[in-house]
Length: 401
Ligand code: ACO
Image 1 (cartoon, rainbow, N blue to C red):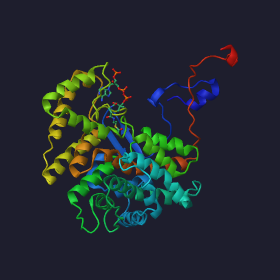
Image 2 (cartoon, rainbow, N blue to C red; image 1 turned 30 degrees about the vertical axis):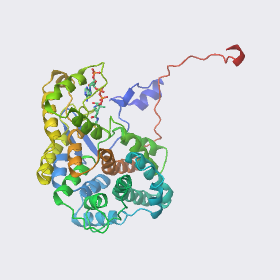
Image 3 (spheres, protein in one colour; image 1 turned 135 degrees about the horizontal axis):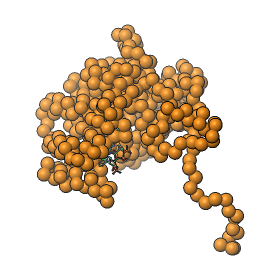
Image 4 (cartoon, rainbow, N blue to C red; image 1 turned 60 degrees about the horizontal axis):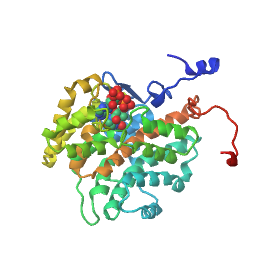
């Protein structure tokens, strides 16, 4: 391992690594990924066990505090989060400034960025108590903000949080419930959603998390930093991939059309890529995709839906995994390949998919941001560049050009 800081101090040379494919930007104790083996651990616990046996609140506590909570600690944490689920009433007015057909991710960027204007009593990042409160506020308010974005888009009134429900149950009710009607949370859907939240909670220095850290390294307030992360997550190569993957599967439509799309994905003159396939770090099956595939079956059985798109996905996966191009490039399904099928079966429109990703990833962003702020070695993030423009030259007056 080269100590880049020493190398730079001694020689004035720095590394050129577009896309940061081999550059660690920080030290972190949160998440470990072995991309060759397809292993993902949070604080040492593997994602399969966490997604099967724990809850999103438990994983949130683990990421924030380093250890699994005791029963009393978990109850206390869940209670604290539930006390912060309400939004400032004036934020409801803020939504009304958006067009109804605005993409909900555009609304998320705006509303989360605006939180610092409403909760400036927790933006002193040098104060650990402020950091804690703003972290809790962000985790607690994201489901409310996301559900309101959805309600706004379909023209239904906002629902206040019901803090007797679980984190996930409350989100489902605020999204799919309507005033004056009792909304019964389906425990199978609640469990599946909670699992999806766990699977997206953190993933070390991905583009949006690096964005949050970079924004935070300048001392920006946490609400602004998370809004920056949301903006980055929106891109189709990152969080937008689950929306793109489902759209692609629907466009393929029937298994007989799969070979045509596989050929397109391999054609270097065609910009088309198999969405939900490939990953910067995983050169093996993404362990989150395995859990997702299993969850699709559970949800379909529970809701008694038989979406033909699932069959297309299964056959596409099989064909791609047996194709020399995908084998050679080590392209496997990632977390986004199956998640859209589940979310669609539950009733979310595709525009909401990335919003749900942002909701779950907020806990990772917040934990990473806290870790960075507490690290005494942390400096402002300031990459260098390789300059490729003209060398020094004299200004030419306008009359002489
Ligand atoms: N379909 C076809 N070919 C692909 C795909 C794909 N989905 N992904 C990568 N490749 C090819 C590239 O064309 C490239 O080929 P080359 O060596 O001939 O140039 C090679 O595989 C390596 O790909 P890169 O783009 O260099 O790999 P990188 O690590 O930069 O990109 C990424 C990773 C962005 C995820 C890419 O695989 C991709 O675009 N996948 C589709 C989008 C997607 O599913 N994103 C979700 C990622 S997971 C997440 O954000 C939660």
